[in-house]
Image (cartoon, rainbow, N blue to C red; front, side, top):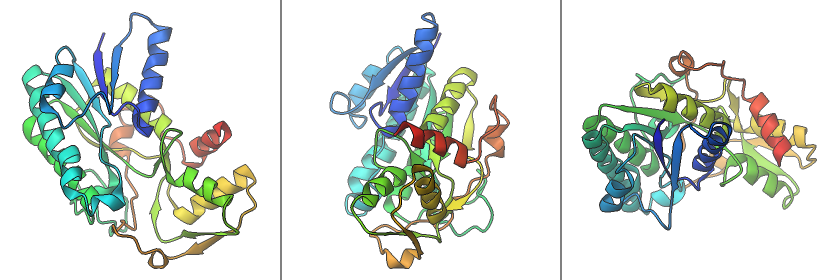
Amino acid sequence: MDKIVLLGARGMFGSEIYNLCAKCRKASPSGDNITPLDLPQFDITDKNMLEKVLQDANVVVNCAAYTNVEKAESQSEQAFKINAEAVGNLAKIAHNKNIYVIHISTDFAFDGKKETPYLETDRTNPINVYGKSKLEGETLLAKNHNRYAIIRVQWTYGKNGNNFITKLISLSTQKENLKVVDDQFGSPTWTQEAAKVIREFISKKPQGLFHFAAAGFASRYDVAKFAFEKLKISTPVIPCKSSEFPTVAARPASSRFCCDKIQSLLDKPIELWQKPLERFLKTL
């Protein structure tokens, strides 16, 4: 039986992991024991608090992060404190206690200029503060610990948090039409599907760096059109270029992942992005 500490348990990703692990626990009372932690009771930047909560753990899943990409540009110190420095502290404590760490990272480690899907071995080159802070967290984890899995995810959506899908649905009730960029490519990935991968990693404890996303690729515009058709939302979706929506933080044009490495470890094939997205839309 594993004693798991889940950091960032109230977030969009963390809440899915906790719900899945809780279901497993209910089905098998002798199974894993999971402790969910998040603000305001728990602060990952408090090193003493971090050491205390990991006292008896043998697995820690870190979903805690500074995730506001736009604000990170002006709040870089806070972003690096949470996404990098705290992860370095976590790595050192985990190393001393021989704790297996699963750490969630991002496609923003890349600049988005590669014409083919990104491999785990590809050169990183983040183009905004958020991406730089998350990459620094990866580096500090790998430097200070040897029992870890870093899982980079992309274009995540779920119930408990702001994301591209739920924002679009909300905006569709407020505007006559919606402009959506057709020059950013990736794969919308349901946090519930990613949580299943985390559950497998807790059991199998593989080590290293992995990419995970739903299979297939699409533009933001393609995803919006698909979602609106499934929900029968009549608000017109109009394709446009990223240049029409200037943002404080630069975004990678391509976030496409090659997921062959992680697929080789999983019990089931990774589904095409349309299938889990359709299931998610039915829950709304």
